[in-house]
Image 1 (cartoon, rainbow, N blue to C red):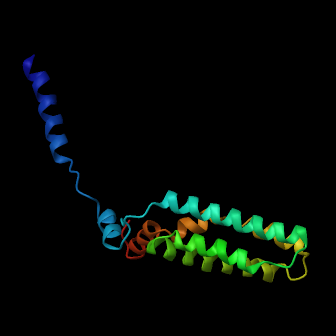
Image 2 (spheres, helix red, strand yellow; image 1 turned 60 degrees about the horizontal axis):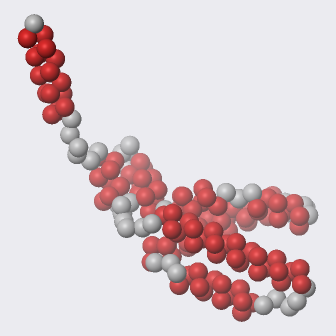
Image 3 (tube, rainbow, N blue to C red; image 1 turned 120 degrees about the horizontal axis):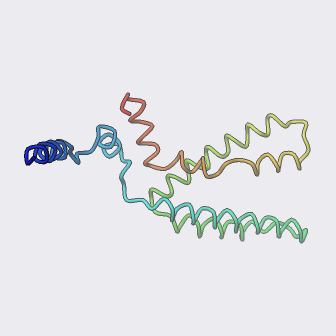
Length: 151
C-alpha cells in the first residue's frame, strides 16, 4: 500500500524537477534584439491618443470658426507631445508616423475620384492601434527573431 502512494509521489517529484524556468530560445532572442527594454507601452499609447485627440480638435476648431489657420498653436501641441516622449517613444512615434502616412497615401491613391468626405471616412478607419503595436520594440524584436526561424 505504501509503495502505491510512494511511486506516483516520486514520479511527480522527478517531473517537477525536470521542468526548468529557463527562458525559451525565442525569449532569449527577443531580449538580445532589444525587445525587453524599459518602455511603458501603455503610457506611450495614452500620450499618443491624448496628442492625437488634442491636435484633431484644434484642427476642427480652426475649420469651424473659419479663422486663419493658427500653425503656431498646432506646432505648440506637437512640440509639447514630442518633448513628453523618451528616446524610445520618439522612435516608436516616428515609425508610427511613417506607417500611417503610407496607409493614408494608399487610401488617397484608391480614392482619386472620391469626395473629401469619402477620403476622411476611410482615413478615420485606419487602425492606429495596430500600427502602434507593430512599431513597439517588443513586436519588432519578435518579428526579427521569427525572421531568423526562431518561434
